[in-house]
Amino acid sequence: MAFDEYRLANRDNWDDRVPIHYGSDDYGIQKFIDNPEHISDVVQFDLDNDELGDVSGKTLLHLQCHIGTDTLSWARQGAEVTGVDFSEPAIEACRKLSTDSATPGEFVVAEFYDSPHVLENRQFDVVYTGVGAICWLPDINAWAKIVADFLKPGGTFYILEGHPMMWSVSQDDHGEQVVLDWPYFESAGPLAEENEGTYAGEGTLEHTREYNFTHGLGETINALIQAGLVLDVVHEHKSLHWQAFPMLVQADNGLWKMPEGKEDFLPLMHSIKAHKPE
Ligand SMILES: C[S@@+](CC[C@H](N)C(=O)[O-])C[C@H]1O[C@@H](n2cnc3c(N)ncnc32)[C@H](O)[C@@H]1O
Image (cartoon, rainbow, N blue to C red):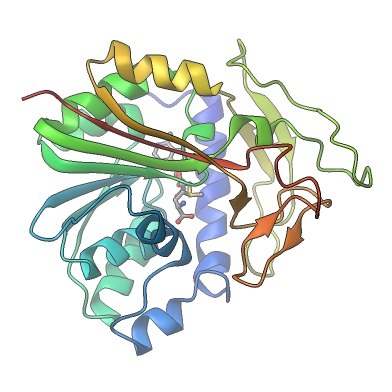
């Protein structure tokens, strides 16, 4: 599939982020290598919520797997994992981490919308994605169709993702006022941003331009329903893994929350579990 200018720019941008993230404390690569029981904060959050259920012995496809810390965490929970991402350096990093941490996994380079072709329409027991994944994809209906096609009949889809309401909040400091700077609903074109740094680690990106796409929660849910999946859980969370805007405060467990007294004002992440009928 031909990349449009947005995905070409995004791929260059993500390629640049890989070495910075791999060396950062936030992704905890050395902890992953040193301790065979270490799992990523994101997968720990999923386990604490106990929504996805036991993955051991199941085939699990991780869409937009980045440098593999979440993918290999599911492998450490007993899943037979396959990770897919459009960044070649990211997939190389996944393979290195898999070897260095002695945690088996299959990793494949593919642009999201091209992944059914690259994976030759394989099907999996579990399809997993999230935490900064769908904001890079322009078409949520086509996304949901691909997710559904990758599932075996009876298989489970699970996503933990930044809440679209959270993405729409201004990243400037407005004290404890919630100010909206970005659209909530899926809009016609992407949102362009220039950033020299990234959210984890120190370092400067050569390719600073990125294009994001918004998707409202209802749009995502309806896309999954239209694709034939049956919803099991829709959960809006009051914490997330990074300081998305200045007002958020860090809790004892390391997660970021709205300030005291405003915990119930705004959802910060959401999770959706769905299954494909037999
Ligand atoms: C924030 S990561 C999400 C994974 C996980 N939450 C993590 O932090 O490890 C976003 C990933 O999406 C990938 N990505 C962005 N656009 C993509 C596309 N069109 N096709 C495939 N992968 C894409 C990037 O390369 C990046 O690895």
